[in-house]
Image (tube, rainbow, N blue to C red):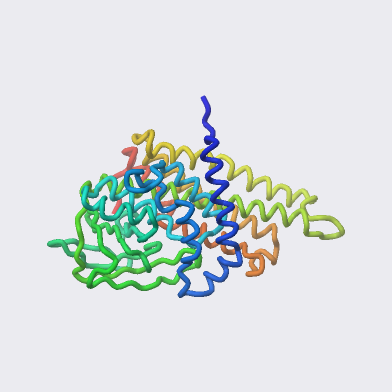
Length: 363
């Protein structure tokens, strides 16, 4: 049995990487990070031409009709490029509409999402990772009240999928009265987080409740793990390349056994993660009974491995590793945010234990 990617999947990932090399170079990422008003519209336009917004949207609505594994492969390429784009919402919002939207809601929004005419964000952090700082959204009589934190892409999204504190999902038009947005200060300047405040904001309910929320959570875990995988690949590549060039005592540092061990340990830690992430993406569509647990394993394990790789790659670079000139910090900070989004590894492991009946429900 062949457990490798298909030729089409490899070609699609390579094609996206080439597109990102032109549209989202490190210089472009650095410019985005330095300008809070920059929304990366040119980068998103290039990815829209590629077809990325419609990757999981059915063909009948103008999308590509592909699987979460395909989306994970795209997330991996985006992580390699530290691309400043709202990809999480571009996958999770269509999934929410597919799983829980009415035929009218699907017909209204899915074609616009597939074409890139509108962008979407998903505010489910409190429902998945637990509420903090008084955050949380309540629903009553078709209105939402409260606050949602750490919403990727939420600053400019035209469509919002919002989870209330009971796990119910709601569709909110980005132009709705009573909705305010603020940027949240964070370490990762390639993915800006939004704080959304709802003051009796009109919302349309989505069906499915906790079951659909769990599916969105699983998909989000897989995409974040895949993004982290791509980022780790680059950090290892950069460390190895630097070790081959940098000289100390008349020799390249890559010839020193200690540096060789550091690079080998990074590669040995990361390589098993690749099949774990790919299988988690595959299981979402093909093995739903396993999907939640394997998604949790992928998110939690990549969160831990990425911290080791980020630290070790920086150590291989020495003092150069923390400079803006090198740019390694963009990947370092990106995996740091991915580690915490939708739950840090400790919480995700606790949820995995709960799924297996080993512990009780979490707060």
